[in-house]
Image 1 (cartoon, helix red, strand yellow):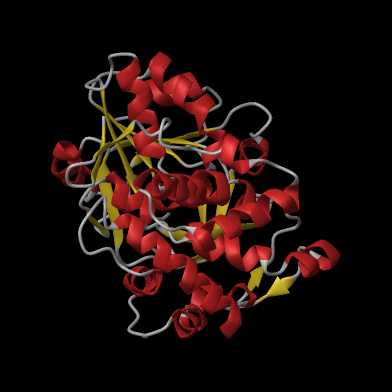
Image 2 (image 1 turned 180 degrees about the horizontal axis):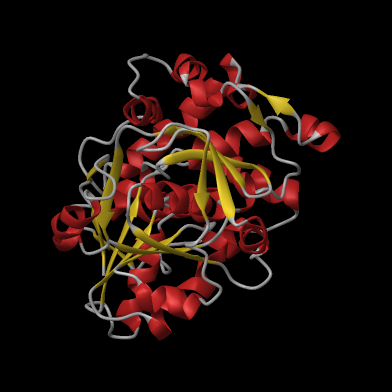
Length: 360
């Protein structure tokens, strides 16, 4: 399989190494100004992987032949394009796909954030919606972090990860291809579900905001399990109740955040606090270095804001969710309501007759 990975951060490096070890043809590229890890890989010649891979025991050194300085060439080469960057950095890579991609390519966003729906809406505006198969997962399959130059730690590989295409009629076809790479991917009802089920919208945002003082005084500091406490977990559960009520208008039987986390990590705990404390990959962590970290600057405007604005459109109560968003806006002196994704970005309409939401 020819796989082009756009973005050379934590997830990009983990995917490039893991998929190369599985025997796939991989090219990894990043835009200028965000290509530090590309330069390091070129200098070292290898990518060191600690922790886990899908196929071999770690630690292992992977020859960095997958590095490609030309994003254009990576896009042209690939059957599958994986855009593994924060949502706020996707536009420049999307433009490369629009300019150099070819008909029939799979364009995959491995981390929700309403990314597939947003790009599909952009394709529709150009009359190009049939040119690409656009999909996303609810979560990055790797729990991973770059720990040294040319050295990535894969702390875990999730057991089950939802996938859907923006055009849900193409999900089965896409999964038939993607399951050759990631058998953990399974079918979601639609791309609304994958984005609603991205745990980062609540897990990252609330645990970070609740630790603002400590992060600004000491960050990045070593912690465990996101520094979660029973009270923080209760806040998360109250916000999650609103998320679930909104999600009911987009797909059936939405899971709670606790249910999502149990599915991802193969757990059977009955409350969010115990679940987070049971995830071994969270045992040793480092906090964000400041409040502009992507746990706020990405997960608020590109995950929580669109969920809340969809709730507003449907006339649903989002008091707790709005409070978290407003707290983030005040914290960073940003209006995430304006800069984030919203109902227009996602190509949303509401069938008022039965309150069913669809993408157009």
